Length: 214
Image (cartoon, rainbow, N blue to C red):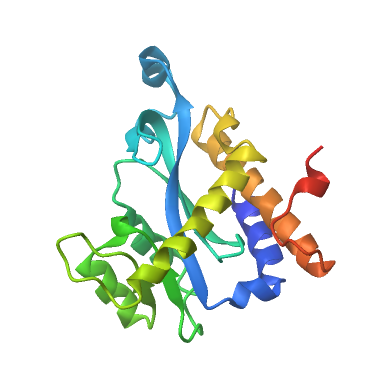
């Protein structure tokens, strides 16, 4: 897994997209078992857990992939975590783990959904010169420019759609902590490599995997 993460970073940093001043952040389920007996016997027990996916209206047993990426889909960093862990805490932990990510990025903006509403998170990012754009709760005064966020928020969903539809994110087949980490990392590396190649060769669509999907 460390080697895969390092290679993702090398390829990502070798594109012009690495310096994009806008990031999108969200999480998606990574199911690891279906039946109760399998969940109890799994080597992932204690790390994976039960969670709920609101966008698909389903419960699942497994992990959540938390992804920070550019709007074009280039992965900046990623985390696999128990689905019960708060998204806001995972974002803080991810940025704390690698403080070079936000260093020397003047005017960096991160776009998230309502799951990232938190005064603590706002303060944490502001101290690092990072601006967080996300919708407000219904009973709160709308934030400036909030009406423009919806189409931008669809970008992260399209990134997850690429990972699931073309790279079989949910069919990873991992049965151990190292196995799941490596297999999820492989899919992110494949997407990064495709983006790197498409940018280097001047392809019209940055995240198109059609040429490699056979």
